[in-house]
Amino acid sequence: MDEITEDLFDEKKINQAIRRGKRKTIIRTVIISIVVFVVLTIANFAISAYFSEKAFKQWDAYVRLSTPNGYISETVDSTGILGGQSHYKVSKDMKIKPVVIEQKQYQFGLIPSVLISRGRGGSIGVGGDDWQMGYKENGWREMLFFHPEVTYKKYKDDQELIHEMEGDKIYEVALSFDQPYKWDALPLFDFPEMTWFWLNAYSEEQLKTIRQEAKENDWPATFVRENEALGFSMREPTYSTAEWKYEYEEFLKLLQTSTFPQHKTAYDTMKEMNMDDVEVLGIVIYGTMEEIEKIITKPFVKASSLGGVIDNY
Image (cartoon, rainbow, N blue to C red):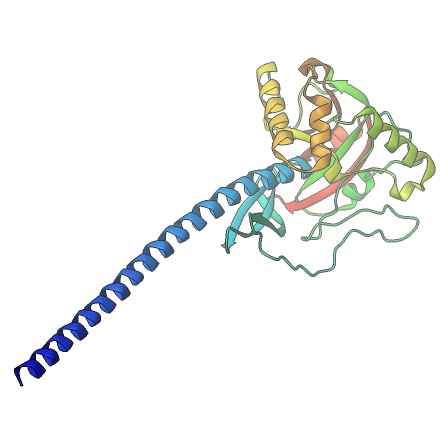
């Protein structure tokens, strides 16, 4: 009888020990799982944040280079596993206030999110006898540029269009010069407040292609598009050598940061160029009708193209 009781007692202790072991195993597994989850979550966040910041700098550089006085004004990230996607707004500084002109998105990370986008764009012309220009999402025209060292069959002239507009407005107008000018020999002494300078960042091969296209194609489709014109902005009417040098160096940094092939080509073309040898091909100015007309009629202006228009308040 005593032996039977001892056996039952031993079996009970064994079962208790087994249950305690199971509980410890479960608790250990839960703790390890929580620790692993926390570590992986932190690691995923850190990796996603790193690639998000890297992608933002690259895309902001692209926007600043391809949109005169444009920049990314807002981003909203949605992260997944080791990556994600960012929705961003592109704004343009219109001298008196910024205006959101487009909303887009990009992917980032080691495992970028699948991005599906649908929509109808505005890169159209009215017809065969009109300029084949594009339009931004907010309805503004994309400005057209004309390289001074290329002979075009026809040049854009929006002076009459601007003159016919009514109301107190601020206009954005691209002016293409009659020839390239060095920065210290520009045809204007005082520029309007906030002027964007179009630089000659084209290689000989690119210039040859532009000339060939202007010669072989019809005039409605021969010009330099807004996102193909590269440059930087100066906010003061007059500027010093130091200010020009600073903006030019920042411009080169943007070319380095952007991953767009055209920008890499432009950097290779300009990286060894002395600042004094940099050529200005045109400008983008902002102002009222009276301020614009004072410059648009100058003899050094070969072509003019209207961009954005906002109320002057």
